[in-house]
Length: 337
Ligand SMILES: NC(=O)c1ccc[n+]([C@@H]2O[C@H](COP(=O)([O-])OP(=O)(O)OC[C@H]3O[C@@H](n4cnc5c(N)ncnc54)[C@H](OP(=O)(O)O)[C@@H]3O)[C@@H](O)[C@H]2O)c1
Image 1 (cartoon, rainbow, N blue to C red):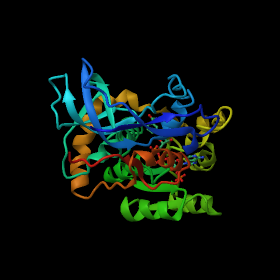
Image 2 (cartoon, rainbow, N blue to C red):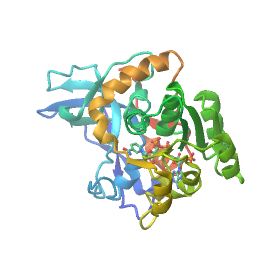
Image 3 (cartoon, rainbow, N blue to C red):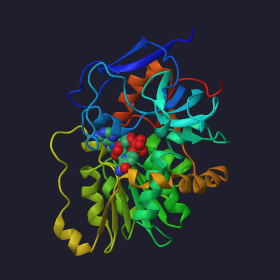
Image 4 (spheres, protein in one colour):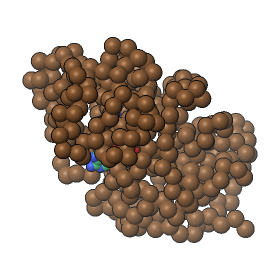
């Protein structure tokens, strides 16, 4: 008999969720697909910063899951049985399965993905939601081109790393900001940014100023006030600012501080709020652009994978603390049946 297993919320997290807030336990195997859906075998779980907020009822108005509930979240999974003729057993999907080995899910939210040369888990990172977020911010909001000086923080992550490489592929100069020597090395050596500054090393502000002289024309913000406070004053007149993520504020009390209104006027700056949900219908456009870039070496990615469903709570805590390198995932099963 096939054994199922899932991760449930043990207690409502009071602050940033920790591994101890979760419990991994055996659970019944779904008897089959739901009437409108699929029975799937989870291959890899996506560890995303928004989930930390979602567990505390702080994400896009979605209610927090109750203690005892299975952890929500997206995964790459393989169809075992299907009640929807559009999906066949053996095919792969990206879907909200929750944190479990096996799940019965509606077909409506599942997106088919075709295995290729790139590992299938890339559909959770560079070829998935984070990659689409980067593409949307760089090309659809900031409209980056050859004359731009592009700065992005959390530059080693799936969003930041992809955003800088897209900017470079469009001819811009790309400067990253990241939080460790291993991260800056990844950003320069693997992602191919022109430079990357470690903001945890004293004097980083001066180094950034030199690296992006005469000042960024585009800044892509993933972290929040502690970076923005330094980069915004460097922005050139008519610069564009993409507000994508505020990772350092997700679990802090109160609202993030407001941007100074006077300098926004003085710089004639354009500010874009980015919500990836606005661009989901264009995901194939991004995948069609990114796939040949990956195959020809123009777009690199790095995965930080932990092994087995039982590792998910600790991997999630690492990711929320920013201790991962690249895109954080949990490998639950082999992609071969
Ligand atoms: N707007 C949207 O629709 C959308 C969609 C997807 C993602 N996002 C946002 O985009 C950003 C990047 O996403 P990602 O998936 O690629 O994640 P990620 O970059 O892999 O992880 C977040 C990074 O934020 C940095 N960070 C700085 N201060 C932090 C703090 N106090 N706590 C935790 N992290 C901190 C860390 O990098 P360093 O060590 O380098 O500082 C950390 O690795 C996140 O803010 C995410 O919420 C937004």
